[in-house]
Length: 330
Picture 1 (cartoon, rainbow, N blue to C red):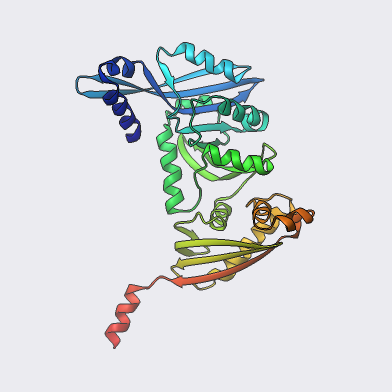
Picture 2 (picture 1 turned 90 degrees about the vertical axis):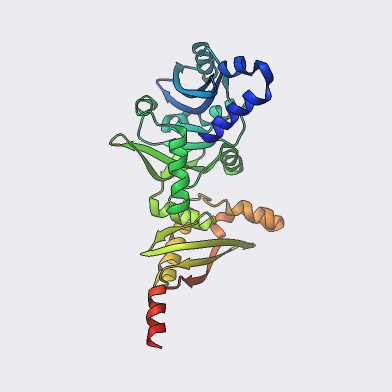
């Protein structure tokens, strides 16, 4: 929310005497939610209105809804409801429901690409098992959702942010990607595992543990808890050589006992499960294409031929209590 206020202040400070009028006429779009029901788009837009009063800035959150057969018509109807210009380039979050993804994901993506007012760095999340209308009643802000995801990204490894540009790049490779997933339980915002997209359709929801494994394989774990062990630091490196994929993990853990054996087995099972289902969850074939195009070009059904190798370089975090006991004995 601070960056929104900074933006409003910047607009006021750098536009001279006219800034009072411009600020009062500006409505910053922070969240866009899209559902698809009964052959119509349900569009929800939350805005933050800035208004300068004396030497302070008053902000007010307003949410608009529209239901139209065409997404552009839904946007146009909301424009008619707002007495201020909708400022789109500061969009923080796009929320998509199951119906929106399964029935209209390509059209939704095209709509955002065709509008040059957006920046492509806004985050995208999947709202599972909950309608946008009910979501609106809970008055949940984009800032709250983003903070939930970013906190768990750093502290638990259960999730990771996915911005629109990254989503688009992944879909362009093989029509597959995944999104961080949220839902509402007992009127509270709740984080779930990643939801996979396959051929622009909802494919599968990962458990929280599977989501940790996916983040670990992609070097997106900062801290986590896996196999009864605290992961304090982790760095994952991936190297390819023809059909051989080498994973090396530089990891600091609270206890090395049985960690490597259990984790390696889980990682291998995880990768082979999706390999057998012909779902390239890590975009490994694309990695092979970039690193060895000739081999990629001459190999059919490359995904099924990939072999996985794991190397763990584990460091156990020093137990200061044990160290003190040892020193005392000496």
